[in-house]
Amino acid sequence: MERWLAGDGLPLAEVAASVRAWTPFAADSPLYELFAQRLADDPDILAVLARIRTSPPINVLFAAVQHLLTADDALAAWYPRLAGESRTPDDAAYAAFRAFVLSRRDEILELAATRRTQTNEVRRCAVLMPVIAAALAERGWDGPVHAIDMGASAGLGLLMDSVAYRYGDTRIGSSPLTLDSENRGGFALPDAPPAFATRTGLDLAPVDATDPAQAAWLEALVWPEQADRLERLRAAIALRRDVDITMVAGDAALTLPQVASALPTGPIVLWHSIALYQLPDEALDAIDEAVARVAAERPLVRVAFEPQPGGGADIRVALRPREAAPVATAHTHGAWLDLP
Image (cartoon, rainbow, N blue to C red; front, side, top):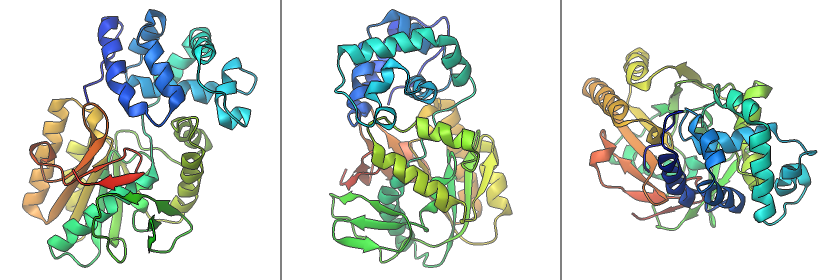
């Protein structure tokens, strides 16, 4: 995915180009796809978007709108959680969106200044888990491992060993929360999810999902039409309360070595899912160096699940994943796993 740009002095043509690069990733949301297509040619909305400095700004804009929206607003007619059912996206939908953004610009920008894109889609575990299980088996690590999630948001991805999975007729594990995914590539599935000795989430600004205000922001990041994702998020937050997860705030390039050195002996499985694409190359380089330093001291496997230009995402297993070939492709929200 192309880097996202923000700033008051940024040419609107560059902001529009970033929006167009993002649009293929909205295929699962007809409403957001329409909004993205229209606002890419709307200088007034692009000017608002350019002032959102977190990345990617369009996700933050859409979430801020949904967070502020009430059933009394005209725009609510296209949001099922407020209207009960949604209208088909059309010219009127964009007109209502445009009017809402321009009339609530200051509130949107104030909210955006303190929020990040931290979509914590727990179903991503369903595409990561088979790849991680295979990587551990290949290395002969058959006991519990230390799990670290970079860009962990509220840490819901660290529920990987606490949820159940269903791939067609194959069910793995037992849990109040079952994640459904399609195993298109015919990947070998383990009998059980990998067992974790410890679970640590690294994030610049960890989300406390037990705080109603912070949980509301996570809900605002869920796309309007996707009631199943909203239900899954709420179920994951409920499950999260009973699972021991340590969240660590700060730059992963700095916190990863500190966390790793403090863990008991044993191998580490480190992953990130639709998170590090937000970082510039120099930050990615620093993380790669930190991972290499930790791997020189103790057994570590890294699994990277990140979006790619043109839409879609792939999964790579390597200490420096940008230099490795993908082992799988996957839906960004975990709906399916396929061969690269």
